[in-house]
Amino acid sequence: PAALRPHTRMVAGAMSAMGWVMVDEPGGYVKDSLNAIPVYGRQVSGLEGEEHDALVRALTGLVRALRGLVEAHFSKGLVRAGEGLLDSEKYSYPSKEIVQSYRLLITQKLQPFLRAARTPPPPDTLTDMAT
Image (cartoon, rainbow, N blue to C red; front, top):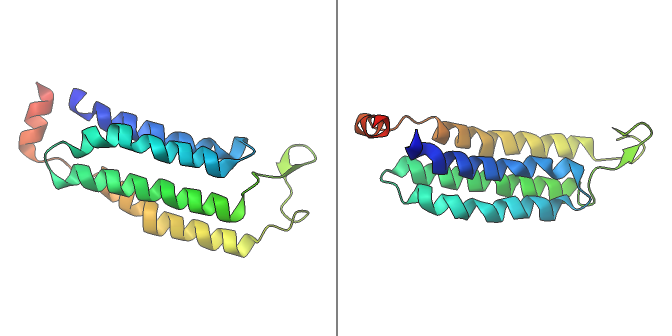
């Protein structure tokens, strides 16, 4: 529905941050996606209901956490070796720390975002969306 277009655009813009794996300076790339959230986030936050604000906060927190993970462990991007595969042993990535950081990203940021995103709007909002 048209009422959800700003939500969809906000999430789509933020998810472009997932392209960090293809660039040489991923921290800046993710930061650009983070900076794009307020463009549609203001439209989403302007809607009536706390669930809209919660979605913007959760998405912002998720992308900030992704930026932190990327800057902490992949500040120079993914180092590629051989056939284009990541050779983590050769470049001695701190795999335990990466896994722990990723786990925290999922549990502390992604799960709250998904909960906020699937909170159903009040019934009167659904009626408004149908028209």
